[in-house]
Length: 424
Image (cartoon, rainbow, N blue to C red):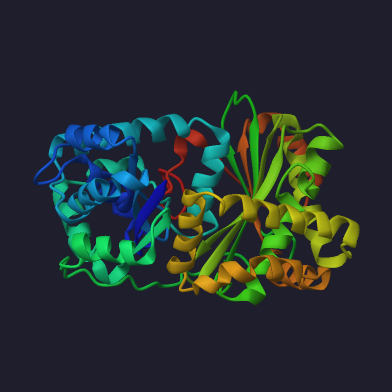
């Protein structure tokens, strides 16, 4: 089996809020028709090879990926080169893709957990959701796709990554054959940091409630923007990775222990870092009964605080490191996992040798590094609760008596406005 990915350093950061989702739509459309193949022909030819082709965008990059057995790689590469180099962006396919995206978003905006992350993208992180808004998706036209493609997708910002049963010489030959003559005016992406919200003064900065009457559950999110915390700096990345494993990285993590196992307030709680070229985004999140949302918010803040003060005994720290290194080992045993790991390194300008030192770098993280990182970067986050406010209003005021609560009815929510309200 061989997995090949064309990774392009272009993504949602290149868009405006008014065109949010353009990167994802453009890259997804690459497999929907070319000058020589229709979407149906692309699908049929790949299926005939017994392989797969996928395309799409994340925040930092776009990608087209194929996976086939080694004896089918030549034909698969010809299809990949065609969809990347000769897209025609059929209007009918774009209309279908937009309808599907809007339908999915409309449904997701009825779900408290999705709404919490959607709101955090603007309220805490001062960015737009990578998938776009209903209005931004609707506004995107074929000309927008062509303009994005011409400006962002080209050889200067791209890399071909091969993993599997193929030699370096054979991979180079295929790359030269199918992409050696690729010419484009597209420039390599230039990253800019977004301004941060909040401060480091307290364990919680602002408290936002999105009121969803008769919601079955409430979503509780702790969100913190970490501008200046860069993926390529080992002093940030590895302590943050071990910290996350400790706090919310699995069943035995502290958040899950306190919220689910000890108190039965949720089916699960977790946390994670999302990396940007010049920043990181941190969230801790869970869903619970409406009535217990204030208690869960209080527990989240307490666990973030505990990271900044208490020692982490080796009996707790060592297993959390083992979770990370074990997961890393399993991921790079597959061609797809290895390609994704290498794509991450390329996206953030890291050398391939970074993979060789991952286990050692994770193993070297100390509890003092975790405390220092948490103290410097995790305090001052926002609490965002999405649920039926009438069911937790009194308890929220009791548990956070000195905190001003910003309440926005879900019917009034509009993340395109600074106030997040349709009327302001």
